Image 1 (cartoon, rainbow, N blue to C red):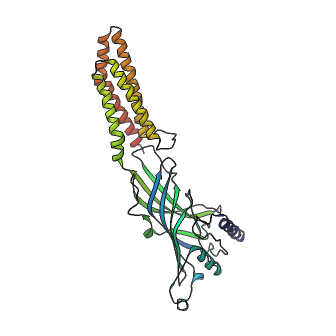
Image 2 (cartoon, helix red, strand yellow; image 1 turned 90 degrees about the vertical axis):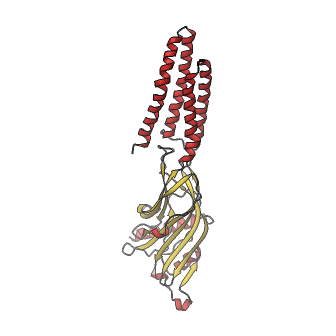
Length: 353
């Protein structure tokens, strides 16, 4: 047990000395003593309130946020005489609080944000110490967070899961985290137009911490859905128009004109594919929209080949055969082919768990 305490202590000192001093926030001056024990854990309440979502980068699979973190715990070693001081509370900035706690041999429950990708730029932070030793630490900061749970299989009908994970530096035997639900969740004006965000909840769990031991973790988990109006107007409506144009080609008697228009449609589908893929990472699987686009691309390519074949039949004197095939394509092949593509895509991508 003594060896474990000593190793954690020296790890914390090294962490404090190596961290960037300008960008990181809470308790970067180190710890002089560890008083939490398996018999007497430090109980720390954690609140995570996201005020703003500054960006959602699908391609990099991360998001930016402005967050208010709140930590509450009680340590009798920090208690003071309110009559002697003349007030019930003392307020510190974080470095001053660490120094004050060190003089009392008090535990300062440091944390890391597990899925943090950038420096955490602290806007405001303060620690309020009540006369009975109860501490409330509040920090408002901005940072970029990893979002590894993104799955684009149903794009653009997908629902994505966002996480904000706070992990204790100390092992669970010494510091225990619990969620402050009343101080957690999403703000009313997140400033994010592309996504509909909600279903926020706090989850408490354990994970492997920086010390290599199991550490407590509290996560704010919330979900995001896309505004489908954008995709209906900008993607699906133009695609429907292109499908109708391809079907209208069958009513032209001149096969050369059909080939020219179908070729132009192919270029439009290529442009669609590039525009959509620019917003997504290089995935190893097809999304719902990818499948629809690729099938439409193949159908339009087949349309070019089919009209070339009809042109050759007409030139070779078999115009009646060409007209029969053309009529069959108008009534059955083209409309039923697209109906089958859309139906299979909905079943395979949207209805499967």
